[in-house]
Length: 436
Image 1 (cartoon, rainbow, N blue to C red):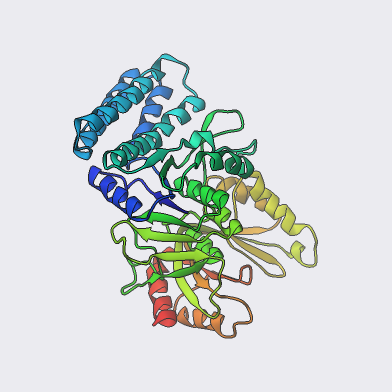
Image 2: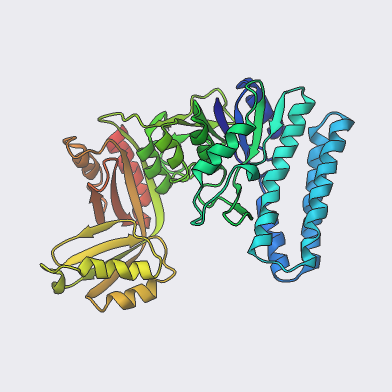
């Protein structure tokens, strides 16, 4: 059994829905297919919720009407028979009548989440009807019947496994379900925060001990560098889960860094595939390490560096704890950290409370701030016993000023902080120095 996830752009038009249906049928029976909402739908539903929060019923109705017209055109282009056009229109009309009732009641975050869930419900019903029209044996399994979070908002993996397994009654059937949406511990409609539909696919694959989790997008896997900046990049065909997490955090937009953790712990491989090039091998992610290999370079923009210098830090205990507690009090995470005998430098990507953080840090030492910085991350087998790997990286950066270097915190990356204006030059230098 495989779990196949398709994002919003992959099902963003009637033709793309047909293309996905063809891929699903070609992959065989017994698989579970996870779908996002059609591209643009969730944003429109957020807009409708915004009008309802502001008690603007007319704005909500106008936006709802435009979305309903969009789906009427999708249905007309997607189905060939009057029978299935009538089925799909009947379901869509029911959904939009329901959405039209929300202006009559008190509108809270609870109602907003119900509204946002409709996008995935629509896309999965449209796909199910289309496959049925093609004569495919398909079953729609509602995510709200098995996908649940606990009191901390984390997925309840025991509940998911216990309630999902009984729904899969035949190996001769294709199963369709919704990504992103779930029930919470209070039995209310909610959503998965990290990674959305990718997270759903990972949780389902882990619960079922699937053969493979496939994440289908319109991007050709992960590349060894940013193809918008560096020429002649190549797709990375294999990554360790830790390497994928590093790349996901440091700029590889194809995958949220935490959404594949359930697959990692269940030892279920994840494969990134391209709906535009379905025959390409994609990128496989698993727990197998390739020793002695540098895989890729990624970058993360909008970084701020903060340095605090104090003689009180020398041979003192508790100093770093006080510093970290300041960041914790403002719910600001730290990306990189480097220390010396009398100073500590940190980088953050959230400057919402920067002024308050600087004010509090000045109680303990002299504070300096560098704005408009960028983290460059080199990912691969960076175990400290691999003699010469760090020198290859730093040698490639010999003509570029580096504010911070982090090495040893992970066996899978070396991170460097540079000015944003030097990012492109740094990526090109690393590509030439490492991959050429």
